[in-house]
Length: 218
Image (tube, rainbow, N blue to C red; front, side, top):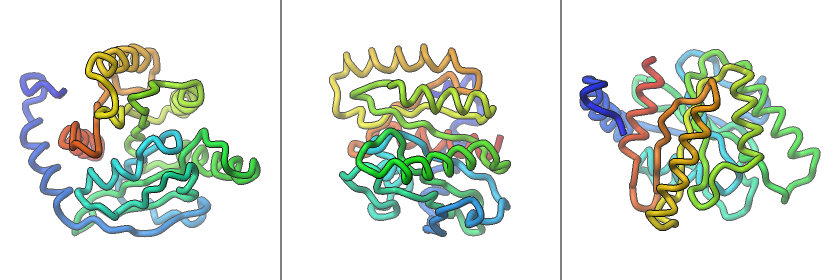
């Protein structure tokens, strides 16, 4: 959690974030390849995570709109970079990236998606922060570590977000959070504080909105 004494602007930012996410948010486009990306005119915040980690559900909760991002029980449903405009006039964009680590797709398709994500993360100058989503029930897996290390090497600032926190016992959640924060401290490009969320219960959503705005304005 953000300490108001260490960050005196936290309350103001939280209110501005609330208003921003309560305002206009619209799907812009899906980009199957880098040449289809929109012009790099505003800051971008990207969402990464294993397939079925709850990216689309979290985006919907963040925007307080049920159908903004498609959700699916089928791993690998998101196959492109999906862009969402936030604010009118436009303030920044959210980018929903293809999930990684799934097995129910042809290997050439998986390879293509992986190259798309890697190239985007490494080369997008307006990318302010990547939010790496980790399922609270499982913690950080080897496939997640590969992505964290890739972000470290590319010097892309990222922050870990635990999802589905309502699906585990409080004691298990505390254990997973401690382990995740300990691992985050080992990665040079990682934000040291982990945000715990539940799309269903609304846990951590206000904090996540503030974190997004803080990254946009940094």
